[in-house]
Image (tube, rainbow, N blue to C red):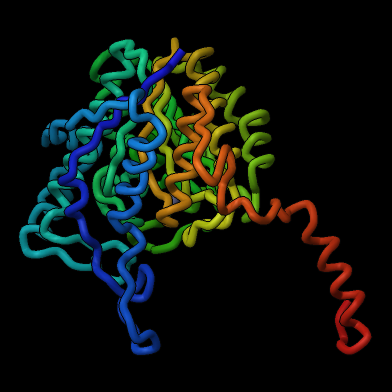
Length: 375
Ligand SMILES: [Zn+2]
């Protein structure tokens, strides 16, 4: 029974600031006002507000230690670490033609975030009865051993997995339900059989030849001893609550159970949420409640309850609170009755359309073919 949340958090993580522009891209004359980058501090501030409001007696904040150079080098090359440190010291900026940018604080904030992930995993392996949750900003799962990518700089989940192995774990399972492929984590463990990586994500493929060459396809299964231990599950837009439940029934539960991990790390990006600007998978607070419940059950059944939650993406700042609340409700097996919202989700205003869309389009085509050449 898990009753409380230990939140690994430090205000320093608010100081990371990617460049403003047209959403995640550089400025353009066709919009009069630059937007803040989607990785805005409000994301994590809202999660903190949700925790304070919903679990005031059942949460504690622990300030993490910064990850050490040795801990980071378990995943990232020393050349890359030197590069990012110098890039920040020079003031930062956007990395070439990518959507990823840094300011002078980013390297230090990334060290704090990686330290939060290590703290959460240590906590879990020391038999904590609480849920260890690393509220990481910046996120980590796109960061590869030799490059930054997708708003990520140091791979928090991978660094935490290495810390778990260092501590005595024989096998670590990383379940990544962020709506984007955890390509950095895949890359870190691609030839390894002691870390199982399961990623469910949009079928977005490679998005940059140099910074994100991985496809996230079914065919990327790992190499050598790691063959089979990299499990990608591409999902269609609009997968929804029912689709994610089926994902666990048919793939995640049986594969993780067979792997029999010492500890389970969840790369918990709630950008599969119903209104997320970087995802379209329509998962509601109730759907995330279900996901939380399922990883908790899986951890109890396969890993003596050893479970650590690491924050990844989630870009609609207010829905991220409701979505992450759902994850906690599922893990703690506790419903939070919110004033005005009850157990509901304010973004759950349309049901998942996936079962309906074809028949609706059939009807529209039938209707408009009186005037247009369509079939
Ligand atoms: Zn994401």
